[in-house]
Image (cartoon, rainbow, N blue to C red; front, side, top):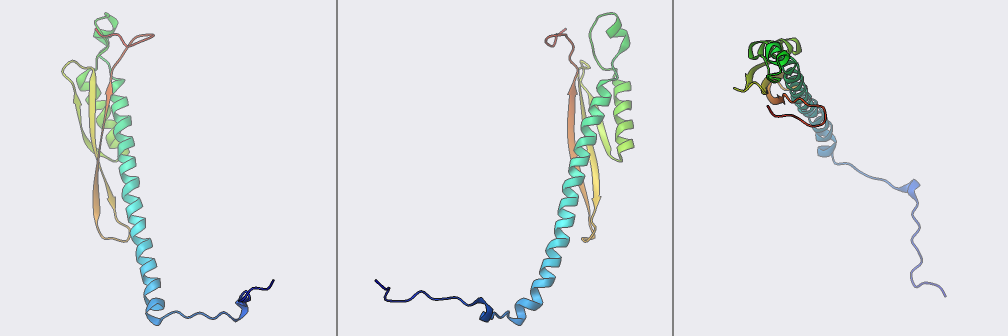
Length: 147
């Protein structure tokens, strides 16, 4: 039983292709342009991640600045607003970011808003990125105790 149409044999040694001059001329610059834009796009993403990390760690640093007078007497674990803001600002400055620090009225929640920048490598532009993080002071051995 033989097929009506014999199977076509491909001979890849004789395969010849062609590229249009337009495609040959345009493809290389487009690949370079795409690569250059990707470098800056990922740079902005890294700057945002870095700013977010700085904001998170600044909030943690601020949360370490508790009011010793209230903690020792057993009144509660709350942040010393001035010391907490100072610790967070010091961390922001050390990380190369700007920002604001807010301590809640009861001294239990600290919010840090950080601003960072990314200077484009291939695109002549400076991007500004923002991040926010907060820390809540809790204490207790098995579960947080509310004073």
